[in-house]
Image (cartoon, rainbow, N blue to C red):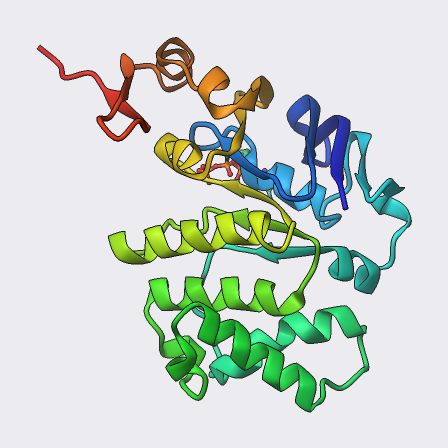
Length: 258
Ligand SMILES: Nc1ncnc2c1ncn2[C@@H]1O[C@H](COP(=O)(O)OP(=O)(O)OP(=O)(O)O)[C@@H](O)[C@H]1O
């Protein structure tokens, strides 16, 4: 299933945050959304998910305008991994993951034993099966992030939107989550769009890149093409070099001063 944004304008009421945004996420592809703080990444995601109405243009999910789809239908097509915050109430971790199943079922349906099994399997897949009975509100930030990723896996939607999925993860878990993301695309053929502040992740994932600056898309295509030293220097306002490691992977390095 393909996710498409066509000439989208995004924002809040009369405040336009971004415009002329055209992008697509094809099955089996990973798209990294990169851009400085405040350039509109989260606003774009909320619009792609149908949580925020577009100020212009349209979002298509599998060819259907998202504005015409019901909430449960959207949840069967697209899963969202938000940034992890601690909820004010205690929740069993497995229940948080089960919410991914309930989202598909609609407002009043009760999840059953099969949903419980699927939720536990999603936790196991991320190596955190032992957290199932723990209180979600007392997990560490990184553990909560992994649980929200498990919730999206349990939702089993063909498309996944992830807002900075590796932001609070340690070095090992970052690598593990990136490997899972690559696996979702290659193995299950899911389409993934994620935001990140680390351009190296786009190279590690062999992803496509949408580079945003000031509410505009200024580059869209393969990471090797879009993420040049010149483009990164312009967007982040400091000299950046893109170098090749001995193992043949590109890495981005801010230039040393002085
Ligand atoms: N609820 C809101 N109402 C009005 N303006 C908002 C709202 N949420 C965000 N904004 C504004 O929209 C702009 C884009 O914010 P957004 O959160 O989309 O950026 P971002 O690229 O995700 O940033 P970051 O990388 O720091 O997470 C900012 O100027 C922000 O102040």
